[in-house]
Amino acid sequence: MADMEGLTEGKHYHLDKPQATGGFFLKGCDSLDWGMKNRLARIFNPKSGRTVMLAIDHGYFQGPTTGLERVDINIMPIAPYADTLMLTRGILRSVVPAAYTKPIVLRVSGGTSILKELSNEEIAVGIEEAIRLNVCAMAVQVFIGGEFEKQSIINMTKMVDMGNRYGIPTLAVTAVGKDMARDARYFRLATRICAELGATYIKSYYIEKGFETVTASCPVPIVMAGGKKIPELDALTMAYNAVQQGAAGVDMGRNIFQSQSPVAMLKAIKAVVHENEKPEKALDLYNTMKREG
Ligand code: R5P
Image (cartoon, rainbow, N blue to C red; front, side, top):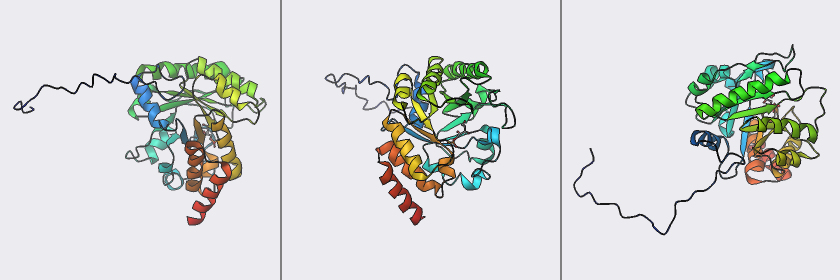
């Protein structure tokens, strides 16, 4: 027990300074509970309000994707340079050391493969697993306009209900079918539906025309999806445009781990996302770091 001797009554009440009530730094997230906000504050950098997520969950429907054949060898050395790691529970348990303390976004929908209709997903991970694995968010694919649109939306709302109960954010991942138009109208529809139905934040693709109307009409944060590998300058430009037009960061996979220097690419993307570095300058940074190994 604390020594009672010499105990003095507190007197530093700072009566001239009312306690700050400051709002939470992420759009649309101020009325969330403390645990939820704390998890979001680990995913998103509170200073920049943005995140660089490294997505390596591809195997859940397409097996060992190029660059992810050996996550232990290819990904674990670069993972500390990302703000957040997005992956499946299988890879988390089998490959990621428990001493890895960066925030985890856990893929919780699944049940389909590239050999069949992808939108036919179910919830493939229970909330207890998410809690047990101490994750910072759960990712669910939502197929607006897809064959199993309703099922995928209900997968998301179920995770939102469970996540809200235990303070774990839900990331809605908008998936675009092959024959759907990738335009502002589609992404406004898809992201807004996810937000209206409770997603904490949303992963969506960048589009050249009207991306700012997608972020403006979505009341919660959007992180930009990466997509297939493109030249480094193009990927950096896409990330730059997305954050300048309202995205709260990026969630990229192949454009990082399929790059010739994934660490240099992560650092260059972080400069663009957190420091508003221009794409050309970020490419210089990439080339220099790549040369230096
Ligand atoms: C998207 O549908 C999945 O989450 C992917 O497995 C992954 O996140 C895609 O990342 P990227 O397109 O940047 O390689």
